[in-house]
Image 1 (cartoon, rainbow, N blue to C red):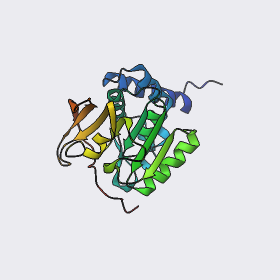
Image 2 (image 1 turned 90 degrees about the vertical axis):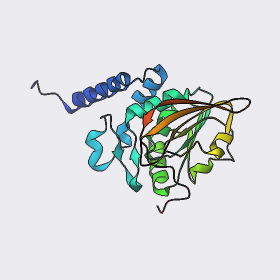
Image 3 (image 1 turned 120 degrees about the horizontal axis):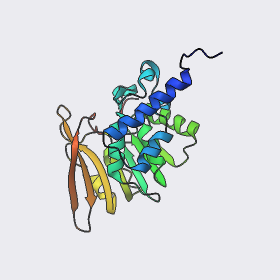
Image 4 (image 1 turned 180 degrees about the vertical axis):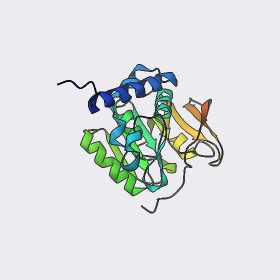
Length: 221
């Protein structure tokens, strides 16, 4: 018998539809990025008290005092990175693993680094459960990048530095792109797109953002 009351599946589909509409309305227009964000369910990366807010366009707290970024910012940063199918990408700041999972749909290989071992461990478990075999996660000081795997076609930094970190700039290929929030942790930061040229770097300011600070060293967890 039909009751006329929407099922939980109908409600979830509606929330996901609104989620994608919000992305487009905030400027995420790249078809490949939108497809990746449709394929990777944010619900796998949001746990506990905030699970019912999974499909809202807002940052949410996760373990170790970190956050999962709001989806529109994830989309805009990914769009600015212009990832190509054969690219190798470094992400600094694994967090929940959501951003790395998005990148995994666009790149050949993703390396992701976080200073918190717990976050790396939990994100790795989700990657395995989702069959995302082209992501490798490390517990390490991301401000120094991953010299053993460099150079990278793309680098995405999901924590704010006072300036684009020199070790990360050095690990970009010629023609490579890095997207990084820059600014003091207690003020609104600027999202910067850096392109490595044959001689030097080109810097382009994208938009104001707010991220947790990029901290050196390994975390306690």
